[in-house]
Image (tube, rainbow, N blue to C red; front, side, top):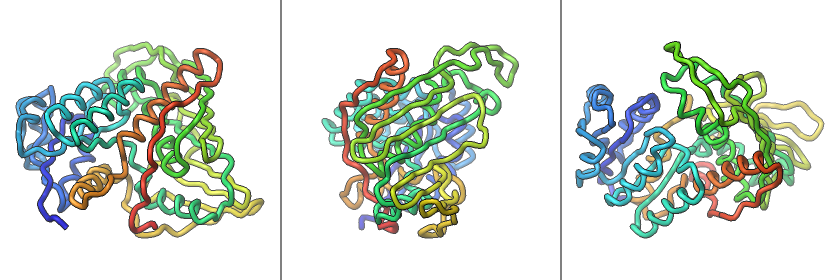
Amino acid sequence: MNERKLGVGVIGCGNIAQPYMQTLTTYPQIQVIGVADKEHSRAKELAAKYNVKTYRSPKALLADPAIELVVNLTIHHAHKKVITQCLEAGKHVHSEKPLALKHKDAQALVELAKQKNLRLGCSPFTFLGEAQQTAWKLVREGKLGTVRVAYAEANWGRIESWHPNPAPFYDVGALFDVGVYPLTLLTAMFGPAKRVTACGRVLHPDRVTKDGAPFHIETPDFMVTMVELANGPLVRLTTNFYVRGRQTGLELHGDIGSLHLDWHLFQGPVEYADFGKPFQPVPLLREPFQGTEWGRAVQDMALAIAEDRPHRATGEQAAHVVEICSAAHQSAKRNRPVEITSTFTPPAPMDWAK
């Protein structure tokens, strides 16, 4: 294996940059060279904490030939522009979710990466976690029999209660922000979707930030989405930015048995039940990372480049998930099902989970 470290730069130094940097700076395959943000003071603060370079601007970071892969941690609305700039500069990219806010834009990014012969990856990547890989292995081995129904809960509470800049989250809506997690896990397990039916509503239109500034939302903060997977279960997904509640995680129900798991935390419990029997804990395939290992997909991409193999958290799958979310919003507006046109090659399980 090539032991040369891959030069990595980070664009976007907001809240999520801290947990990314905590893991990115520990991988032997990666050298985090520097960071950039349109607010230079944020980049300086993050760079000082991790002893890396501060670039005066994202453009300056992209001009550095030592940077081979860019981790894009900008806000949702900036993803298309920033990813395009990175690819045009000849850099591989891993982006936070969503890949874009429109399917045509997401697909254009996938095509641009192909034209440039560059890697394009995207979150969510939590299907790479120990709990999620354990559940997926049980499904592949037929432990549940034919899986016909999945219940997915992404009830994320009020973003303004913890995030200093909640407006972009509410503008894109809960489905695009957190619904993508179970959607990515389910499509990794079972493959592409074929049809979406959804309804949505704004529950709590007038909000107040932590600093006391009022703001108004118009994108549904509550949605129920039914996703028909081409070769898998019928999915009922609930997403909201109003309350967390007690309905959490992902349930898979098959002819023989059922699974319950967390779609987010790598050490989350996995429970199995034979049909009609109580749930029992399932031991994970290996000792899990505690929490969410934010850099795991970037590490996988770095290894994939060195090993000349496909990386797992791909732009193609992320674009497909963008189409699912877009179709759900269209369905809610038109009050009818919407067909899905895109597809993708599902990822391989982790080597330790095969």
